[in-house]
Image (cartoon, rainbow, N blue to C red; front, side):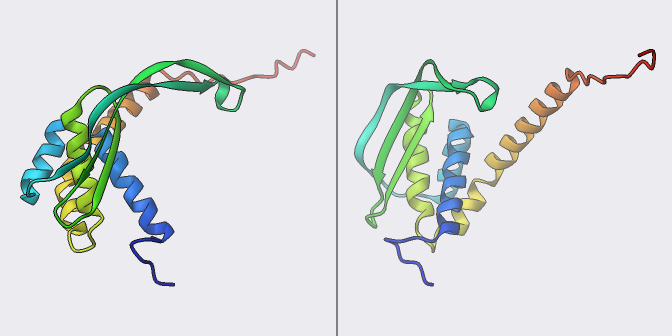
Length: 155
C-alpha cells in the first residue's frame, strides 16, 4: 500500500519520531551545525517558540498508580519552510532557539528528497547522544548490586 503525505505509513511515522527524539536530545550546537550543513533558507514562524509548564507524572515501580511528580518547563515551536512543509518541536527546558532549530529540521526531514541529507547532518548528534547514553549506563552499572539468596541447608 502506497503512502501519501496525508497518510504516512507506520515506518515513516516511527522514523520521524526517532528524528524528533534525536533533536530533543541533541544540544543546540549540534542542531545548529546540522542546519548549517544543510544550508537552509529562511523559515516562517507559525507559532513563535514559547515556554510553558507541563505536569510530569510518575509511577512507582513502573507499573503502579500514576502520581504527579511536579511541573517541568517545556518549549515548543512550529515553523514553515518555503515549500510549505510545517515542522514542530517540543523539548524539556527553556531554550527557544533550540526548539526553532529542531522544528526546522523536522520540516526538512519530511521532504523525501532532503531526508537522507537531514539524517546525515544529524549523525554527529546521534553519535554524541549514543555515547552519552553508554557513559550513563556504565556509571549506573558500576553501582549495581546483585543480591543472591542462598539456602543454608540447616532447615
